[in-house]
Amino acid sequence: MTDAAHDSARGPILGLGVLLMGLVVFVLPEPAAVVVGLGLLYGLGALAVVCGVMNLLAAFRVRELARWLLPTSLLAVLLGLAALAASAVVASGLTRALGLLVMAGGAVILLGARHPVLVCGPPVTTR
Image 1 (tube, helix red, strand yellow):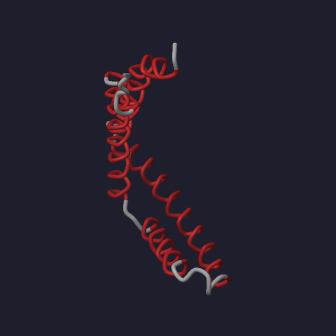
Image 2: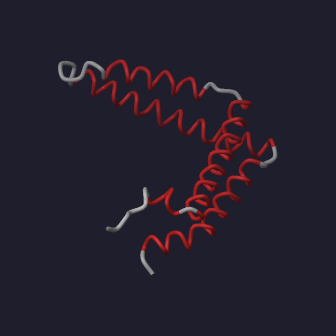
């Protein structure tokens, strides 16, 4: 069995698993969705602040080489602080959106397993 045939044979099982995982995340009860969303939001916000500060320090060191580094690092810090100040409603919406994106990924895997041309590219013609 070739690699492409193996991937397309395994696709429906993998696609259904991803689709079900997205569905589980999407239908979480509201308190659980808020907790998961706040964890994601605070984690990403803290990561953005730390990365922005590190880039800000690097921007002052290499001021002549990268003029774009200072504004983008300030933007990362500001967006990170905005994420840390977000409310629980935003966190719940983030969890629901994440569930929808995972479900869409599962649907793409299922479609790729049904039609391998979508995953592998255009069909190759032999002469």
